[in-house]
Length: 258
Image (tube, rainbow, N blue to C red; front, side):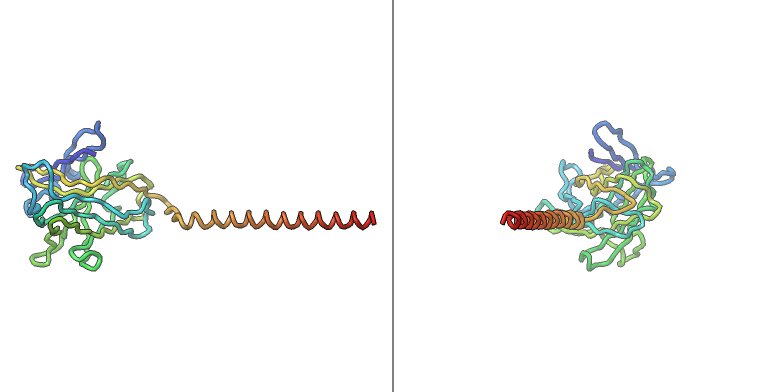
């Protein structure tokens, strides 16, 4: 997945390009109805570290711990977005962006239920995330508090120098979501002039939406082990009976000869 860009549209800055594979063309990140733009690159959401002229951004993102499958209507699963500061300076006002790309492009914003925990991890305050759709049918959610006012508003994450901040994220899908394959990525948007670049992007996190969640490895291994035990036990019983029958037959033959 190539680096994405965010482009200004009028007075607001849009989350822009999501290119899937080397051959995929770039596209803008306006809402599907064309009426607005995502605010991930807005001035009040800009990191306090990293020079727009630098080739690398100080924060690296990583998605970890997510399941391989979700069942629509099956409730939340928790995974984490890890923010690692690769420099010797603190970095604040970090608002990670989560992008979902489904194979069929039929997944709707209202079918994605996304939440995150603020400073303090799973023991901290929990925030719902507004998920919106781009004109290319990707779904984008900024880890921010859209409802907070004044001092109560979430101010982004601060990552100390050389440290990693782990952000717990909860994800679920409504019961009307169709079976599909989905790719999720985390990144940060940094303003560069009138535009914004997606920086520090994570590797792909791929999962499926399925009618039924697959059994765990332990659950799969247990029946398989049980079958093996039964097979071995059955073979042992059969061998014992065959042996006993052979001994009885040999005894009768000796009796007749005697």
